[in-house]
Amino acid sequence: MEDKAQIQEAIKSQGEVVRKLKSEKASKEQIDEEVAKLLALKAQLGDDGKTQFVLKTPKGTRDYNPKQMAIREKVFNTIIRCFKRHGAETIDTPVFELKETLTGKYGEDSKLIYDLKDQGGELLSLRYDLTVPFARYLAMNKITNIKRYHIAKVYRRDNPAMTRGRYREFYQCDFDIAGQYDAMIPDAECLKIVHEILNELDLGDFRIKVNDRRILDGMFAVCGVPDDKFRTICSTVDKLDKMSWEDVKKEMVNEKGLSEEAADQIGEYVSMQGGMDLAERLLQDHKMSQSKQACAGLSDIKLLFKYLQLFHVTDKVVFDLSLARGLDYYTGVIYEAVLTQASAVSAANEAQNGANAEESVSVGSVAGGGRYDGLVGMFDPKGRRVPCVGVSIGIERIFSIMEQKAEASPEKVRTTEVQIMVASAQKNLLEERLQLISELWNAGIKAEVMYKKNPKLLSQLQYCEEAGIPLVAILGEQELKDGVVKLRVVATREEV
Image 1 (cartoon, rainbow, N blue to C red):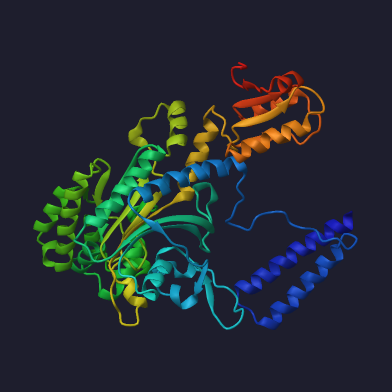
Image 2: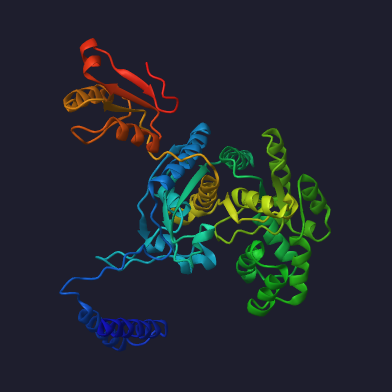
């Protein structure tokens, strides 16, 4: 046994050596040599020729048990119902794209794309989101207008924070409207959809922050940010929901080389929040009004709020100048929904601390999106523009919260939808049970039977209670003679 422990220790330290060499980008020969040593050590461990498997899911991924899947399906159904209510059709695209399709579309996040090994002449990468593949799909099929939703897994080589719903493999639920329409009507509908979904899922209080890329760019220009630094400064401003203004300013000045004066001017603007009134005020602002771009964005924000009033969603929407969204392809309105309370969690905390909702925590974004009018044109050989606006629902975070709520709730989550159990009270009735269940299945009824020739009635009834099956059809010799079935309600034990 001691030898085995020593070998395992040696494998661990040899693994560290290999990782270090890889991170230092050492020569291939050197790495190969150390890897060979590692494999030799692993071979020594060979348990009588049996391989020892490490039983874990890869970093940043997880398995879902039946209970979690039941909650997940419920969430998906709510979201799909909403998308369909708004007239969307659905598409699907491959899980990997040509590498060049994805490159250069995500700003500083491009380093998080998973590249696949060249397997026969094409350089491929796993999709990072569903928006860029959608734009490629539109350009490739020369589609100029479509309203579509797409629910699928995407991949990011991120540092996962699993407890907060950040993974390397996760679902996105996207809704997009592509086509040339009058300003802000589709944009307002996207926000209405976010509002409907978050209300229906009942996750607690939320806010939808709205801004416009043109307002940001105009603000950067009048504050003295050089043109070539717009995108990188934008990525830094995007961190304001996770970092304090002091840290963001430090990054702008020390890492990105922005002048302190420009940073301070940006600081004044990004602290502003409001509604239509703020847009009107900024249109009068002597600095902002110098930028044509910013004025166009502010006029659109005013129009957007007018439509949002008609949709009755302004109670949750706030115009927030600090919202930046780091992706490079946004060109106009951008928005993000944040839960102002991790409802399940903070409800529990409030009970303990008697804290008021004012001190409630922000749990990060649960939906985000915006207008990206230039993306399809990037792929179109003739550069034809197809204006698009869309929203992505952050299903994993929502799902983490729903799971916590289910844990806290006394109600049991049912993992099957079986409506009735076919049981027997006496021995030797297997064939009759199978005949009856077949009739039920053929009639479209969800039914189950015990896989035993002579199960005890008590164990059949207990199974129903555990699985939450509401009804039992009980067969006995007398019932068969009379051509009837005894139907028992599991909860109340009534029989008919």
